[in-house]
Length: 304
Image (tube, rainbow, N blue to C red; front, side, top):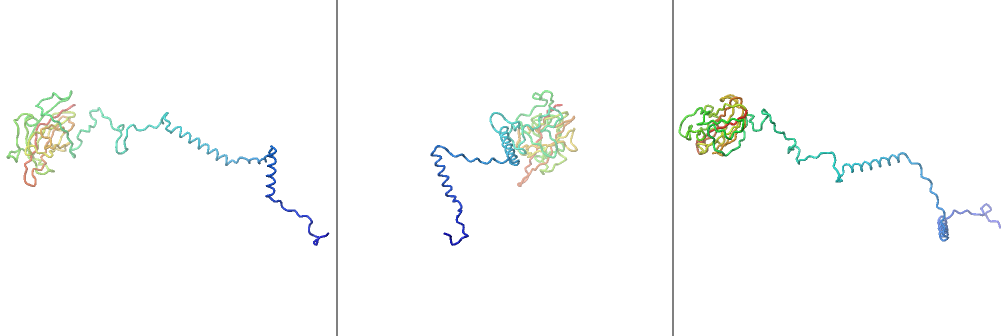
């Protein structure tokens, strides 16, 4: 029987239902599995060609990994060996503590700089103390081989008091029995700790050549006999004083009474003179103290 619409198609083509198709595939797979056989797996398309950029990245990564392994091998602490880098053998902080390997070695040259040599009269050299009795004149028993020993001072020879005068406790005062090592002179101070009375001083002279170790004897006594605090000495490389001294040193006599004090090492080119100057304060807020400097024996042990 013809339809009411003669142009309408008699068959309809519907789109397949994806869910039904998946269910059908699942049932088919189940049947194959129950039969003990599996369907052929679909072949995956072959991978595309290896791109050059990817190859470069892989190569760089491999080099970095190998480099890391090499660093660990040569710098790591494996316990089987060390590196070629030398570590300092002494603990020190650069700029604060000088490492021992950088310290200058002692020179055997007679003309080399000795740290105990006085270099200038502008600064006062620190001194060291020896607790020994004053030697008699000409005593060279303890002088090293090749050295000559000279002792000068009141009662010893080689000593001069310049500008001395007698005025009781205000002036120059002699002490002792007149023998070398037991006699000394008390010299009045200038009254100013920074200025000398250039007309008055004590002087010890030595006929010596080479390098001389100078020692000064400080006698026992009170402030009016041995009161230098400090007492200043100049050293001249000549016979007598005058011009610029080559060095100076100072001794606090009030702290070194009854002792020999090592004053330092000095160069001599034929003659050596030690001068005691008078700068010093001999008064306080209560009035004059009459403090004096003491001049006793001075010894020079010289090597050519």
